[in-house]
Length: 149
Image 1 (cartoon, rainbow, N blue to C red):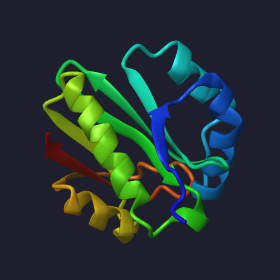
Image 2: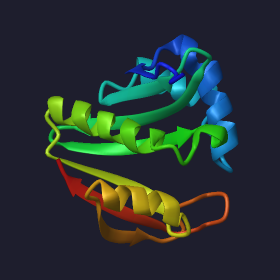
Image 3: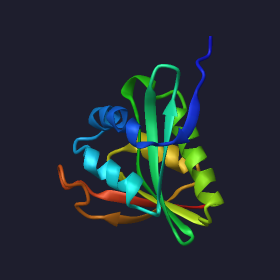
């Protein structure tokens, strides 16, 4: 039986589950305070969660400033990866950003993260610049990617 998957905007009470996804996904996870600030103080931000009947298992954050959207982070719990959830979540966020007036979208991705880069290219993102030493944990470079919405 197929699980019911829903997408919705993130709420403050989701942060505990989001922190688990962060810790499973990133060497330097965002703090509770960072997410609280994004949800309560950042007028440009919106975050979408992906959940089934059991739990939230993915999320994506985006800022829309004037006509430009910026993906802040996207993550899926490891046991849910490779099942197109990340792709569908990003498509949903691209749709919302467009409705909020964005004409193009950008993101940074580790130069070593070929799986993510492949997904972004599949959705139309093109390589832009390199940000040298962007990631604080190991000073890895980031590839900046862009797409017209």
